[in-house]
Image (tube, rainbow, N blue to C red; front, side, top):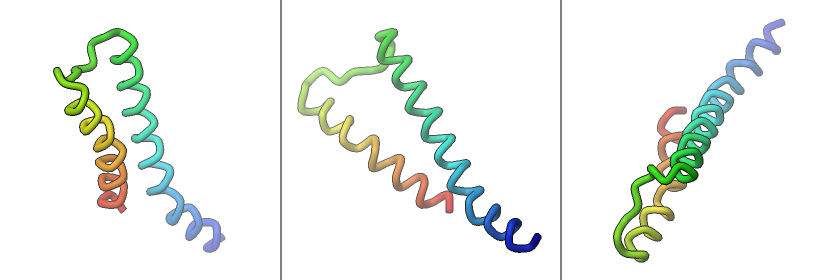
Length: 65
């Protein structure tokens, strides 16, 4: 019984962070399809923003643990 609880406590933060990341991705995808997602004026600025989003998600997930 204790082994199951220990495994659950280890996996619970990973499951919560993954669920949050999937929620954010689905929200961004929906906004992009509706055309309400904010876009930068230059392609270079938009590419920089797009490349920093996964990094921000990674840092947020690491800080949550």
